[in-house]
Image 1 (spheres, rainbow, N blue to C red):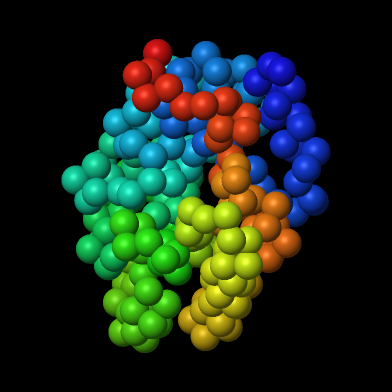
Image 2: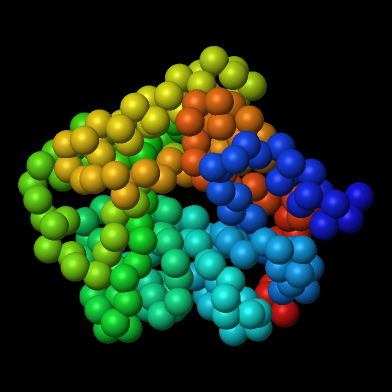
Length: 225
């Protein structure tokens, strides 16, 4: 099945109101262009320098999302054009995003990454840690950042009940934080990937990040070209 056919099949599987981020990391610009020609506009990358290379090669109406762990010294590569950063996991990172967004006279959308998986290697705020941070009010001083919601990665497991519990926890946290600290624009729930996105949708995801189901297996020998 062609990439376009796989993309169309994924699109048909998504209910109205669920946004698709096509995860294009490690895949070349030509493959992204094929999906662009099929109508997809939102693409997700996890390496800032690779994202910058692809931005330079592809149409500039693509809405790029940074979905991977972001080091503070790499924000400068993507701040001039990135639409949304999914992986905000510290005030230190927020401060740098604010600085680089201001430098480029831009507003950048962000999601707080929430750690609920039963895996220490995954990044993100523990729910109580994020509540304490938001209570501090430090985030309010960042005027070039728009807080849009939360993101999570569930445990890599075949236990669907566990995945469902984790997704439900983050869904409930989104509602709580929206009511306590934000407003109706804090509405993005980014969760669910190729192996678990149907469960994420059942649990209220508004945005899913799908790569291999569209592009096929990743080739980590590939670079942007």
